[in-house]
Length: 418
Image (cartoon, rainbow, N blue to C red; front, top):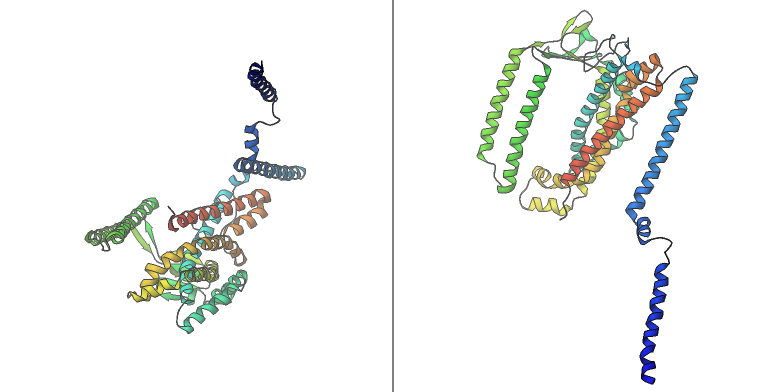
């Protein structure tokens, strides 16, 4: 009897445990494990927060737009861009593309955009070169040169850009002689208080053919240099085919120039009456805005270059001098390729600022986007909301394009961690 009782007791315990586990399994938890993981996931929570912020932003934008539309309706006006097809009826002093008063506001917008892009591109290109040169001079071992570069930076960047624009226009360009007493170079280039007159070529073929030819020649030269650079990097020697390809490229370039000369005629500026005719004209306001913005932006870029160069360990330059590199070789082959990784991110801000600073040229009458579209067009049409939104959209798009391109280049030059 004792053995049988002892043998049945474990069976009774197992039954109790099984029944208890069945009761526990029959109770459903408040939240399933999948739901717990859903809200504990950082990525999911981040997406949810971003969706809520986006929804709040869209709601705010819709509210502002509807409020503005109601106010316009109350004033007897309506929101729309139909005015862009209306004839503008006013002239623009200077434009990259042909324009006259019989064209529409779409053409006015295009003229303002292209004028702004031309000024910004010139400032970015020349300002980057000048700023890089001044930044390198800041690190010169010659105290006179380094101090001169330092005072250039300190004086220029601490004077407001608008004051510099007005200074260059009123003190420098406006004091140039009148057209009859213009400064001339070989009786081809003429500079006076109205601007710069330069010769042009009038082609009998389409401009797009010339543009395609220039792009093809540029792409060919870039491919030759890139292939040669790869060979130098791999073998340390420049291939003999490089010089043959460069010679072939020069021959093609010369033949292209001869063909263009056959298809075009030179248009030389000539003084007729009180002004010059023929050729191309660059207004004094463009020159003043270009010089002021280039000088101002080069000072900021110079500090960026100086900081990037000083971020490189001094042992790099000392090692270059030890193996016989000259100052120029150490800069070109060792210091600048390493410093560019630290220079590109702040350089992006300088390029963006140069594009947005072009709007200050309105103070001296240069016909950029703000001048011809936000001022004259608003005064004539009264479509302030539409015009301002288009101008804001342009600056946003061009800023995003510049940021994207420089960020892509920055990714290429950064160290790759495997």
